[in-house]
Length: 225
Ligand code: ADE
Image 1 (cartoon, rainbow, N blue to C red):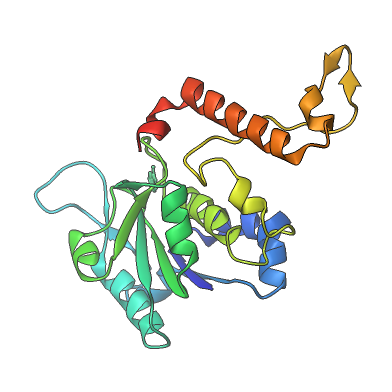
Image 2 (image 1 turned 135 degrees about the vertical axis):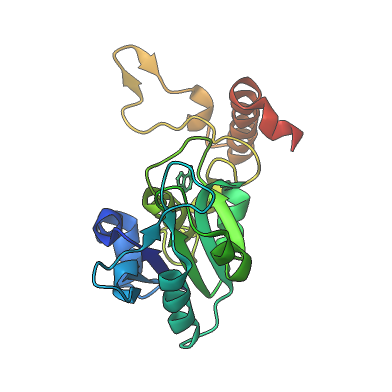
């Protein structure tokens, strides 16, 4: 998979890709991530990427031209399966969207700033608009990092244990059950006996019940979906 991220603040985005699982995935050539600074596609001396809003109103708008130049130059190199715009008015990111995006070959992620981008960018280029939650960030970069993390860990080979993404919370619309490791007892707090029964059918049944109970208590909305 190849991810091209268009941003006015590449430095805000880089560190998540320089540590942990994302770095391992990049080092293993399971994913390529490229950053494109929108200012490199400006034509004026001030390298301006934004302008005043037509019709008046507070806040600047990201201009169409640098974004057009950047996306068009990328499209000249390869075909993109999805051009995603990070924006609070997009569809809310969930595991199902992460799964869908993880199956794509080449994607572009455009990070918004200020009031957002000129509507003509959205009309002409954008194939999917994603929000990471019902709150407004100062830019799309942190949202893009969240999306990339959720997507990249699903690419086959990225997680050590192939099954481990399949047992995450949300993969089956259920939250994950409680988990334990050594010691068996800590300050009087015991690990449930069933986990030592050696009966994998029983253990699986217990985990399913726990997952269901937890989901019912914390996220009943997931059970309706
Ligand atoms: N940009 C600003 N707020 C955002 C959000 N909630 N999700 C994605 N991108 C954003």
